[in-house]
Length: 303
Image (cartoon, rainbow, N blue to C red; front, side):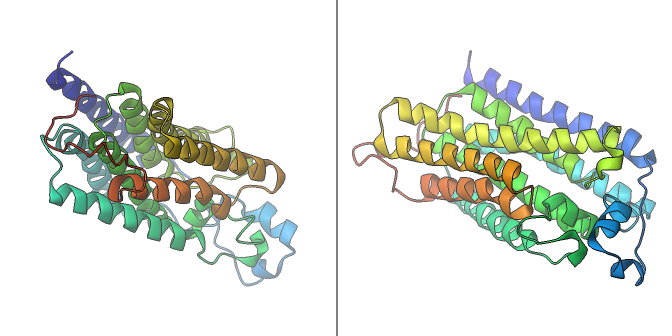
């Protein structure tokens, strides 16, 4: 299969996902009513257990109270998702990696790392417990809905473009990595429109879509990086073997912490921080490069 045909398949996939998202936002989300309660001063004095029982999943400002703002957001986020097809063409199938592409990918990688770190330590009502062990990124989204959207956009854009950059820089030809990364990084756009709904609303389309797409982003986003690391490890490159083992170990550690400690933004950020570090090292340093295997940026990528 030619590069041109493969590129069209990838771009078609991204375009189809963006179209589905746009329809979902226009039809389902616009009319979906999400219960909310704004606590009073008396509520803030309630015991921890009573406060959580009353407000879990409902402590936020009304979503999309302004129709104009809603439609601006729908158009903006849908167009941004469509642009992922453009990134595939300009990064993965570029004749060579330009300085502009390098600067763009490095900038959004740094911005993504900085923002998710800052966001994960935002303040939240003390009744929800310790911010390092009890408060999730989605719970923060109830109090800071627009920060939550920025968090999702930057996380998605930075992981997506830098995974593509990593493939292109190393002339990696695996199709599975591009597909899972495209689907994974697009799924978070659903998550950020549906903050945590609370245990009372688990069996609802809203809550199930939130949890499902959050898990898809986590696993498929990581899978795009792991697939490449395994590929390099099979070539018996010792540095990549170590990087693969380390990254997988962090993912296992996160799962253990989720089971033993509980979910929190801090625990959720662990694999993200490691992924950002690996992508930065692979893409913008020579620490993992073979000395006798310089990058050939003038040859087109086949994926």
